[in-house]
Length: 277
Image 1 (tube, rainbow, N blue to C red):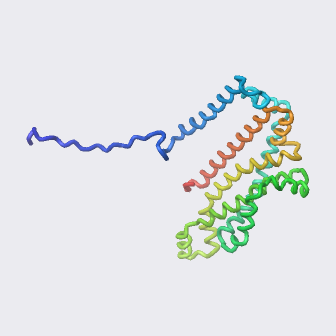
Image 2: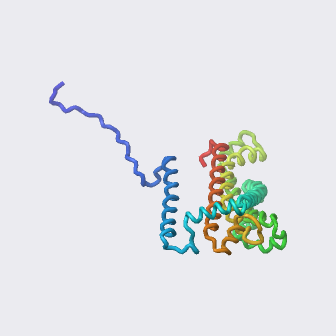
Image 3: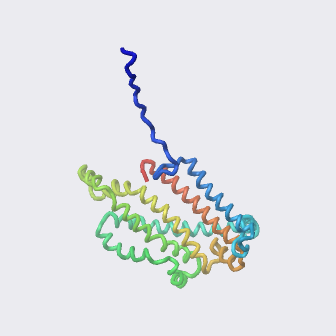
């Protein structure tokens, strides 16, 4: 071999360098937690800067320190745990009632087009009606007790769940249905062994999303004719211009909602580990 001849150097494949802000670039679990926590830290710092610095009157916006002090007072002097328990009971009570009615109806609408043609116009119509608009009627029909509050959450949730479940079930893969027919399945088997199992992860995700909406309805239900609950506390605090208690109540709602959302996600991952949803 002639030493004067150039030696070929094999090309080394270059791994594309990842950029943090590249479109659709995934973020690690640790970075996601740090970024999410970072936003709250920045938010509280800005809030404290404007309130503690005297740029905003305490009458209109309490400082983070005042908010925490008022929160402690709520627990030690005003039995706020009872209010939290009542609100949680109302949310989950109304939501469970809506789920019991909406999921079977949504499955039926997604499975049989004749059922969908019968129910879909009415359900779509009711979906656009605000739940708060029914409160005067519900007070006349059910009084100002717990039934009225459960029905507000029920009305606000049932039509949303029904349509979303129907869309999920109706979007089943046709090839799986045809394969089941080829293997000898009847209509009942198609529903029980193909449509429902295939749609189950999507239905669970629908319930998780609508549960978040239910939390917005409960405050509306508690603003009128209520003697307990977080919404009732917020109304009383508004009359006293106590923005610290108002903000604390809002934060408590967000924390409880976030915990329920994480619990729903964890349950869905465990139940439907095979799903990509």
